[in-house]
Amino acid sequence: MTSISFVSPFFNAENAKKAATSLKVPIIVKDITGEHLDMLLNPKHGYGSGMNPCIDCHALMLKIAGGIMRKEGFDFIFTGEVLGERPMSQNKQSLHTVAKESGYADYVLRPLSAKLLPETKIEKEGKIDRSRLLDISGRQRKRQLEMAAQYGIKDVPTPAGGCLLTDPCFSARLKDLLRREGKPSIHDIELLKVGRHVGLDQKNKVIIGRNEKDNNILRSLDGGKYIMFVPKRVRGPHCMVPRGISGELLERAMEICASYCDAREDGEVMFREKSANPGREIRAAYSRSNRPERFIGDIDKN
Ligand code: SF4
Image (cartoon, rainbow, N blue to C red):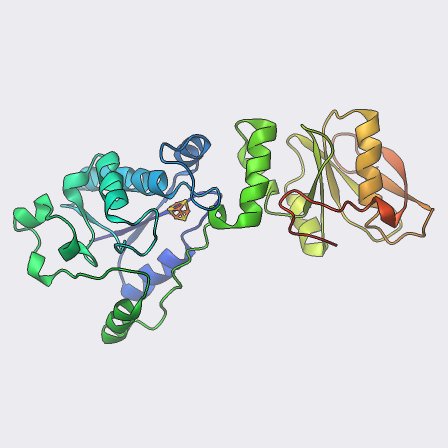
């Protein structure tokens, strides 16, 4: 037996790796960024409450797991899905759809809910004893926690897996990005995770660090479609503005950035370009009133 976990810009395999280590089960960690992003742009079954295309995502993961199963010579795939645990993506119909669209329906077992689901080929063939499978359903995790205690598993992760696509603020930023960019780059997506994002017009936005941590991350993401400016002589945020924007938008962007600097009202802030034209300097008028009232994703109100 081996375990499989997946990584993309939206989720990682840290919990799975910890679990695999503590259970002493080998783990394959597969980066599915490319396939996942293609699917995310146009999921056949749509999105959940955020930008989470859970049915298509599960089907994709099972399809890739199925490929690994075939290649490595395993007999079947089993998952931790529980019937009814998620109203949209884990009802009976969705579990059926996910298995079918993976292309490996005959090989997908959900041991926790198997007795509530149609018998699979692997059970019929006697590879699995159906009588030992379970009939858990619903959102309560009482029986799962009892089983964990019975098997001496102490570190049980919470059911929310930390997928950014279920986060309302991140989802709003991603939606905005898809509207602006069509198909975004990984760099664009990484930038969604940091700072304040302020729309300048339909196409362009400025990204402003909120604190030292954000500034450090922005420095590490410097480049691509953006150029970075940092304030000179005063404390303030690092800012990313789109390469090649008009002088008018650049001025507006720098005034917004200046409004977060430690400067005197009606004074000005000098910014130095860090990338593209290192050394270029831009002067921006300071006024606290230039702070926008709304942000893309609307999570940072001050
Ligand atoms: S929560 Fe995220 S990782 Fe999980 S199935 Fe949905 S989209 Fe995929």
